[in-house]
Amino acid sequence: MRQATLCLLIKENQPEKEILLAMKKRGFGAGKWNGVGGKFEPEKGDKNIVDTLLREVKEEIGVKLKEFKKVGFLRFYFPYKEEWNQDVHIFLAKSWEGKPKESEEMKPKWFRTTEIPFEEMWDDDKLWLPKVLEGKKLRANFVFREGEKITKHDIKIVKEI
Image (tube, rainbow, N blue to C red; front, side):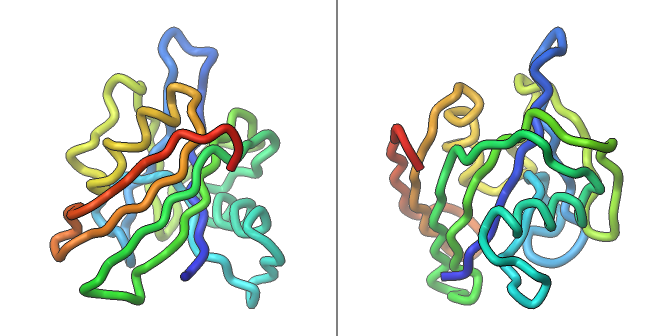
């Protein structure tokens, strides 16, 4: 399985908690709001999944993470397109250097957590993201059919990832 990361920047010291999502402009997931991240690439210097996290966030939105924690592990299956199968390590970040900015791949935008655009995101996000925002850690499996719709899933709340 391909290994990948997904990072969600969170602002908690607002009148209302906010989450940074980014519109994917090209490639896998284009046209959807998502967290930032990408695949493990040893050829780019990644020695582990944290290296991937730090590199991808810097490349995609131009910030350097300072404080982050792993909150989830998601396994995605695409039986109709097996090269899309992947394990995604989910991180929340509450501290970073720099201001998120648009890149060739991603256009970031802050959303109130009560106004997340789930209808413009991957089908699975509405199932696991609210749990993570409530402070839960989880492991999940999702099986998709063509059109990127879920046919089967299971989500387990866990103490440790």
